[in-house]
Every structure is written in structure tokens, then in C-alpha cells.
Amino acid sequence: MSAQTQFELPNPPSDAISAIKFAPASLRLLVASWDKNVYLYDTSESGGRLLQTFEHRAPVLDVCFGDNDEEAYTTGLDWDVRHLNLSTGAQTVLSSHTAGVKSLAYSSQHGILISGSWDSTLHIHHPASPTIPPASITLPSKPFSISLTATKLVVAMASRALQIYDLASLAAAASSLPRTSERTTTAIPIQVEPWQRREGSLKFMTRAVACMPNDAGYASSSIEGRVAVEWFDPSQESQARKYAFKCHRQANEQGIDVVYPVNALAFHAVHGTFASGGGDGYVALWDGVAKRRIRQYQKYASSVSSLSFSMDGKHLAVAISPGFEDGREGVGEGVVKIFIRELGENEAKGKGMK
Image (cartoon, rainbow, N blue to C red):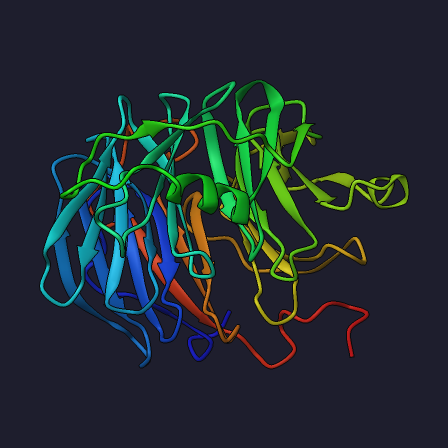
């Protein structure tokens, strides 16, 4: 990997990175860290630069942008879901869970923010409408990862449970709650049936789920070095296409495969291919339709904890954090890093694509 195609961002977090996300309309990058901070970088020029740091009360587990590059949402071990104004630094609590919050997803099509917490609930927020109280949906298990398309929300949970929701139904049910005179952070329980209930294809704990940009399906990954690719269409023909494969396994000196968790998944918005990042320090690109690996990049110095493609598909952000698969022990100064890879025109294109 040459210096011309990749650079390391300056001023990285001092503790493990939990999530990185590119902005919807620029090369701004948000980074959530266990060091209780959210970082905003400008990666538009080689070398990049840190624009601002936003302090939080507890480790931050996820972050995402809203409708534009100036608004963001954060959550973590303080149990709160927050709106963050990136221009002023102002933070507004939108709702409070009763346990740590692992995942966030924002739907620009429906104007709703969804949070998934270890209290086994989803909260649905209408950030632009402060008089609509947050709604709460009880889940059968703890959610480990959530992802959405233009029309659907995928929730991957413990015990191999997976639920797919229709976003329009979610938004309608949440917006039907009685209005309040002022913003409230107390979520009101609602009942919304999932569009589909599934058992996950992977036998071991799910680490990440990511939806295809064409709204056709999703990929999920596990702690046991596997990735599954599935389609939403419930027809027998479509379901017969689903498959899983082994990855992020490295042979030791005795020739025995050491299995690593697949911590991160991210789809390319233009080509529909996807990247996986593992505890082995490798990032690989895959053509999920053709069932082929496109390429694997050279090994990073430690575990890959999060990945994000820019919306134009020309950049891939890679966060590495040592010990990510073994807890946070041993995270020393100077070993948490973020790399920005500038992709060639056909670098992430599938094997069979024209």
C-alpha cells in the first residue's frame, strides 16, 4: 500500500475506536472513542486534519451524521442518545435508555433516528420535531448491531435473533404518539410488528450487520471469522441465494488456522461491494453477488475496529485499535490509528461489473 493511496490522520483518540462514519455530502469523518470523546476530521486533503473534539460523560460507542454535515448523533455508556451540533458544539439529549447504547442509525428518508440499547429496546426519535416524544420498542434480545436502507431496518441480536422492520411503519407508529408541550427524553412504549423475523445464518455471536445500498439485502459478521450474505425477498428462490463464508483466519506456525472476529462491515455506495475488517488486522473487499474476494490489503498493525466508505465511493476510512477483540486491556498511547485510503477508479468494483 503506497503512501500515495493512503494516509494516517493526525491527533487520533487516546483509547479504542468504536465507530467511524463519513458525512453524507463531504469528506468529513466522525470518530467515536472509548476515551469519552467524539472527533471530527476533515479528510479532503492528504494528511487530513482534526477540526474539533466533543467531550462526553462516558465512552462513546456509536456516532452518525444527520441530514447534513453540520449535525450528528452520538451515544454510548452514559445511556443517553444525543444530538450534536457540529457548528456550535451544543449537545441535546433526545432520550435515555436504561443501559448502554450500542448502535445508532439515521434515516434521511423518514427523518427518524433509531438507537439500539443493551436494555433490549429500540428508541425511535424525530429530531426535527421536539414535540413528538421518543418511542420505545421492546426486543426479544440485546441488539448487537443495526443497519438500514431507504425502506428497511435490520436489527441483529443475541441468541442469533434477527428482525427486519419496515421503516415507513416504524416512522408512522412513532409519529402517532400524543404531542408534548416541550421536548421529553422519556420514551413511550409502542407495538410494531417486524416485517420479518429470522434466525441468523451464523452460529456464533454477531459482531456487525450492514445493509446493501440497493435495498436488496444485508451482510452480517460474527466473532468466529465468518460473514453471511442474505436477501430481503422472502421467496424460496431468493432465500436459496443466501450463503456464508470463512474469512479473517490466519495460519499459525503449526499450520493451524487462528480464527479472528470480523469486527466491521461497510458497503460501497456506488458499486454495492463491501469491505470487512477483522481482528487479524486485515481489510478485505468482497463482491457479495459473485461470491468472490476482490482484494485484501496488507496487514495493519492491530485489529480493525471500524470501516466507512465515503458517499462518493472514492475513500475508505479504516480504524485500528489493539486488543479490540479481547476487551480494552493493553491499549497504549500511539497505537490507535485512523487511515484514509484513496481508492482507484476500479479498486472496489466487483469482478463481473462493467
